[in-house]
Length: 411
Image (cartoon, rainbow, N blue to C red; front, side, top):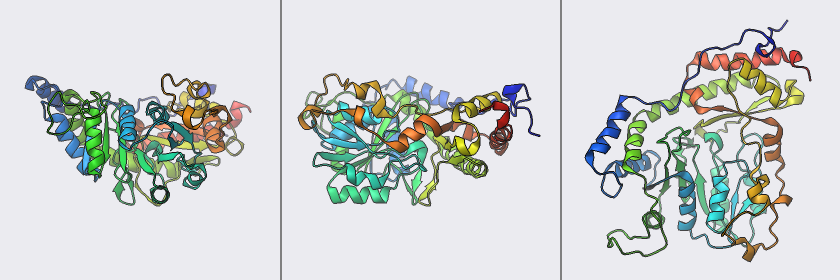
């Protein structure tokens, strides 16, 4: 007979907390104080951001890095640097944070949603070709949760069609595809350092590229349209002040010192947890393809199929919470179902009217995305994967307990 579930009055599997986030120490405090006392609080005067740009680029195998105020700005500036203009179309997945698509709108372009692979949660490269039109100019593959997209296929399609590829690697710090770190494979790669990210400074972002010309454009765009070596009040193109502060640069440099060890811990724990959970019927952890030589695990993602597991997602998550295991259903609404897109509430960004005056996102359907969002998707936060093997065993034990006691939950 199954143990009584905690949600029905039984003893929870776990009562102690999991790892917290962010992780910080005296070294972070000292780094901030050093930046403060230097008197050089801005990127143009200090060395912290420049040092971090160099370190982050080298670590990811890129020639250039431009640090900016957040990941959303990084995406928009990358699109502008790629030459995206009013009415151009950019292919994006619908299962991602709003910024992946809203940055396209802010570049006065049109997001075109391409469905996912059900097993990887990533954009389906086989569906990209069918979505390309004469107006398509770029693809933004999102490495969901830190799992690499099929970059070989995506890059081949892009090169055949003359499209730019901007990797949304905001979940993928340190993750690898065939031994190469994500963010360095496309024309540009974009990362976020927002509070929840695996490497964070509260806010912040960065653009990586191996292309000298794109790097120069990004640098100018983030620095008021200035040109390297030009005069202070000399502005060559449209741009703004999107520079990262020295305080954030100092935190990132300090956090970066411990990042690689944390990334290895997440990778090992995520792989172990996936092996445990995949043994239960109806649980399908995000498939780690052979090309993934290191998973970023910003999220541990899985699907629960109610007909096979015995209960649906909501009942499972409620039962896990009672057992002391924090989980989330993830993105509950495909981006094209957000009111912003259904109502074309794009403010002054009306570039779509030139190319698609009858644009109607209410007609968009991405079945795999809808399956994951509506019924099957489950997330576990990256911080939890920083714990011990025993922590992972507690998570797996809780899933097993809920499955064994599913009859206690009714239908």
